[in-house]
Length: 308
Ligand SMILES: [Zn+2]
Image (cartoon, rainbow, N blue to C red; front, side, top):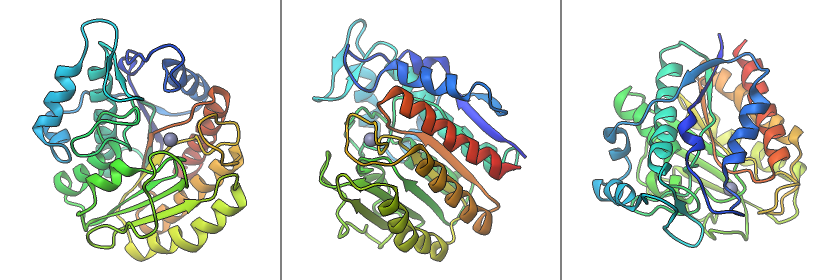
């Protein structure tokens, strides 16, 4: 069995202003780092509007489409910009996540990594924010539940920022367990432990600034892994942000590349126990180009090891 890599050149066509951390070079570095690896390379399709409508109202889709500039940039908020290529990129990022679910659930591959941008985990129901336009991880979870008929899906978000969008989109979805760890305090400010969802299916794990891999490993072992094992998901979706890395400029956690390998290996082990190893991972943040490339490669190498 193999690991799939889903991407599309359109994701390089989402351009942000000079100096913006979520830039084209991020994906170029990730793809370069993954070049030597043995992967089933899959062209990401455009998402269908029906895929997006599982988590966003039509008004949000229309807003994103109508905000697309003909040239230059359109600014959605202080951090979030669109260029002429952003709509196609966002549809590819969402489409990759949906296609990855199809590939994994059909048994064509064991697991999959979506190397796409813009990222998704900050996009709320009707609000694009934090560099994110559509909720890629959440709509992949809904696709697995509503299209494929799964009963339980888990999303694990180890990006350094709170997955507020995923939490919002799946807040009242009792079939989805959302586990998100984040540096706290840090933008966007949400993600307290008392945010538990309408059906107690949201687990927030705050991590103290300047904490490192030891604290992360302890927190996941004590809180996240028991919840996953109790929930017994039939698919695990990973929001793979690499900005908890010690070299990242946007946050102050001190994870090493080895910590990203560790958490990936642990999630693969749990997926092996619970759901035939079925994992779909989608790229979120990570803003130091070298750290991002190293950590993403370590992440995908663990997916490959688990797929053998
Ligand atoms: Zn982040």
